[in-house]
Length: 362
Image 1 (spheres, rainbow, N blue to C red):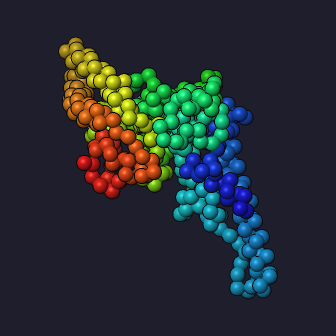
Image 2: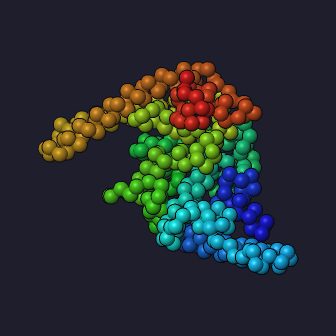
Image 3: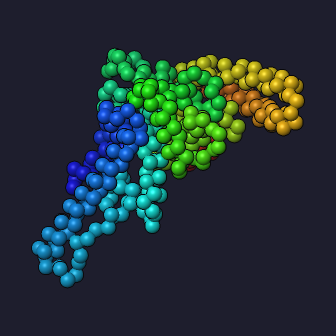
């Protein structure tokens, strides 16, 4: 019983005993995420029932030993089997089998996305189980020292753009696609992306008609991932979301263990300044498209997009100025002080400051 409970606990990345995401682990036997999920979910159901049987047998032994046959019953309800992988316990309530399966599938895919982000950051690796980089100031060379020829190379600077459009080739969405390709292969790549996108729409985000699978995954990453990450790590995030603000002109994740005094300067020169130029060029293109449009509906759509883009341009310019100010300070972290203290060092460059620190951004 203890072994079953420990294996369940260690299947989730908040455990120090976590080694690998279960779906990725099963990729050695299956070339689709769906096949891995179906096998894993059946395994979880079987383990939950096994533990239920063991608990009932244990209860019966205690009842017999103390002569409590008239007072107690050995039976245990499935929702009382306290395994995170037991959907009946995890979600509770009077839910149907279909509802429980949808919730479990969605959350399992959210956990896959989180693990993938961890591999992008160098926290995890496809080539070695467990945590790879988790010391202050770790960098790519520290990773390569442990894993000289990785199957999936982590991001060079641990700065992952989370934008609602594809502005950077190395953004989180494109890297997720590459991760899925590396793990499960080219042949079923589209099928696998479709399974992830459909799964996320079961519970994490709403289905959007006409949206491609990759755009659905992009929307999840840019609108919902960090909220899920905060909940998973109980408002002590290990991936920090730098955000330009309300209009999300620029957002990126930074792995706190790979942050260094030059991270903000690199964020500015490699991402924010180039994005400003890209937004300017895109605004000019939209203006040209509007002038050439002969459709009233199309013109109205373009005007709306241009108005939003102009707001993003203003927001990005203001963010760039603040980012330059903080970059010049070359802020260092002391992880011994904890996430709460360190997260508060960056003013309103970071999202959800109040949720993490308990105080408004200064």
